[in-house]
Length: 432
Image (cartoon, rainbow, N blue to C red; front, side, top):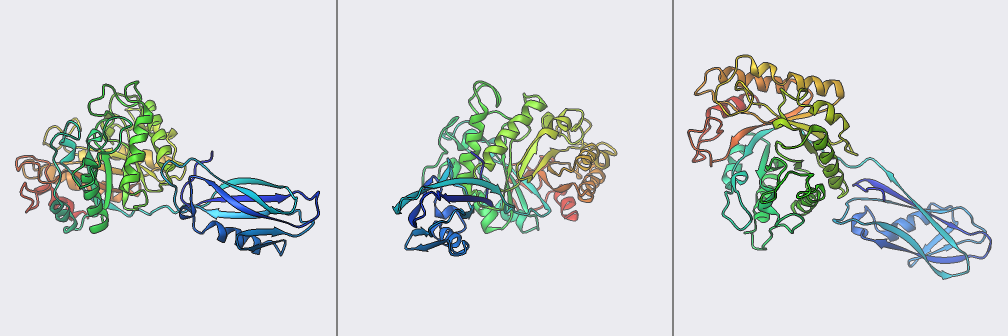
């Protein structure tokens, strides 16, 4: 079965057997999991249009097609896909004879037209923390960023929120159903409340960020292991995007935060599988692809990400590679000092790789504290200048957003009460 996406064009050729010269009539019947709502027009309209284009060989009335005697040219019915339903399993047209003895043969082909791919502008914002620290299952207490924290960044002119969360908080085990109670208290529902507020109410972009390092809470092993098969990861993404709104053009899908425990080639193959599963749902939104080794921009080549990700595939080519970059001596983000020259050099290897291979990137995490380390006041602006100047980057999001960070956390971007900018935010605002 050919994978369908929004914009796919299905062409069906219904060819009459000319051995019997008499006229004949038939009805066109659709079967499969797709309905009229999944196409740009109804089946009746498509058949009627095909008859009208047949130079009088076929006529259409009250749902019935009549073919003139002696006609051998096919009736060509074309339909354009507008959306693909969850669990798509197939679509076919068959003929139901009404009168006459003529035999009709149907052949079909899927031609990928130009899908409608949402254009993502330059996006700059923050990671809105909270849900990634809500450990345990859906039955335990969690941290949920208040909507006011979204307002804080929207009001200051930022246009993207990277939204970290735990997979086991929103899905009831591998291959399980999402945690939807029906009254807004399910963990998946809480994510949807934030997503809808970010994208619909505030008009910002929202990057969905499963923040588990390629693990699943309560399951031993990383994705691709016997305990956590890749199919389960695909299942998670398919259920999540169908619930949150697969036609929401403001959504961006980050496959996983900082995957660990896999080689770069193995992780690339996981990304290929998840991407194919997302596209099979008809989703055309941007997908962000991280690498191993904390997806460091400075180590993109030395970690093996650069070589492996040349084999990553996206059938509609709407993916970017997501990297992180901190400015302390080892680029880990575990200390608060900034290394001299780090801001102006640590993106270089990744930028060069993107330029050489015609790829795009997104800086998904960075941080620093100009208040406690004067060098960060030099390196942070240099880092963002590098990112802004490189046409290969589509934008950036700082780490440390939200009010759950205490006022002593150097990477925070707002004060704990949500009322004032932290020092790094003023740097970010100067680079919007």
